[in-house]
Image 1 (cartoon, rainbow, N blue to C red):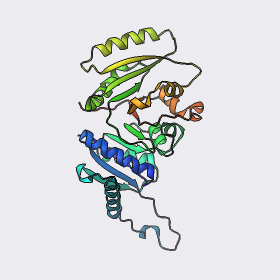
Image 2: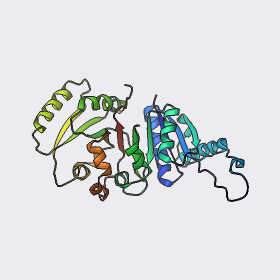
Image 3: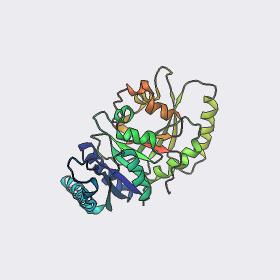
Image 4: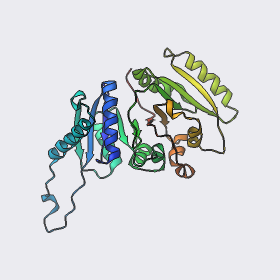
Length: 282
């Protein structure tokens, strides 16, 4: 059973991620851990700071109550999912989430993005983007208005350089949904492309899981990876886009490059970013 950390600031986007996480947990028989960062009180009187009492249990109860109320408002039963909650007073959102993730033994994070442009908000900046670019934990970022759909088609964008290691992580996850995994490789007609494609096809054919295909796309060197993805991704038939985060990789350029920050990426589908050390139990 996966344990999924679900951070919230009680915004509409964060609550929409609650709904997605609830459906995801039901679909995968996973447990949820709700997380909220409590703002530290600021003393504006002569009362010493240490005399301010912060009732964490009250905050946890409020978090549970708010989640249950929201799920119930969508004619769903919150009791069908194992849900716990935790809070902290760490005002650095990224660090607080990573600390909660480690201390509670979580397997992945599901969190919302702010703004109507979905993946663009991950690229252009938010707490979610900050966490993705800093953290070494698996994260699924949910666009602001996206509703859960059973995952039957996953697109994974890869440079094929470390495909065996990458698929050792992604295939067990894909098997949970019995989904089709479509690997996108953008061919820029470089000298290494032919060999990479040949080795990738041989490796894919050797796998026991057969719902995998390699799609070689003609990449335009005038466009960023994000723009090439935008042009090639069929959002009506894809429920999840996976990117693999490694230090100093093309993904870092995708998320941090100044040109890409200006991109408004229209597809509003969840994006999953995996760190190098992720392991999903098959």
